[in-house]
Length: 99
Image: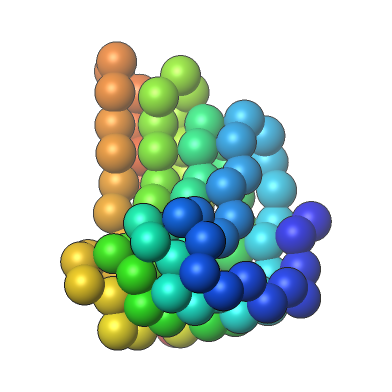
């Protein structure tokens, strides 16, 4: 679990790869690329705030299908899409957003 962190001014605030994990209640601001990136696994992001930067959450499927649930995550003031998926090599990236 990655919880209750305050991250400011990183390229990517939190990058979780290759497993199932829960990310929760983090405050991420002004990341250059994405506040959170989730790759090749099954992830749940609960609560928290992502603000500023190019995008909020990236969901990446490069060597496995990737599933992400965003549960009550507030994303604002990004210059690009708040949530983006990236797929490669026949793998799928899916996102479910819960308010």
